[in-house]
Image (cartoon, rainbow, N blue to C red; front, side, top):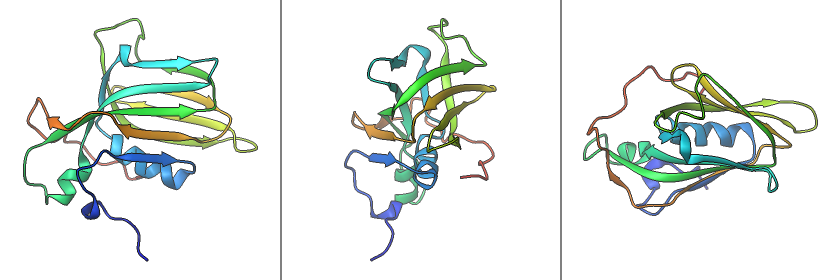
Length: 161
């Protein structure tokens, strides 16, 4: 048996769950350069669930296709469970016209499995979730569509990924 590879993927919707930091590194790489309006995130305090509807760049498709072909995005739902608190910095959640760009997702372990999930944003923004344990899931919810810019995001890669 061998590990799964991007090249083995198909055009089916992606579904990934992160229950530890190794899983989260994969999930983080998949959402790198995702964009979303501020209005597309919500915290359900009663259900202890935080969700973001992302327009995710399909990095896995570029790898499988050998970097050729159209540049695509897909809408994906990122859900973090067991969230006890949410904080943000570097942007105003009241600015409904603001579009955020995701750089990475990290987990800072606390005691007894608890800790903080940080969604790092371009422009020094951050969404920090206090969690009872690490439990994040990413699910594609639409068909892929051609990236409106027609370009591949360009920036230095995060060496932690």
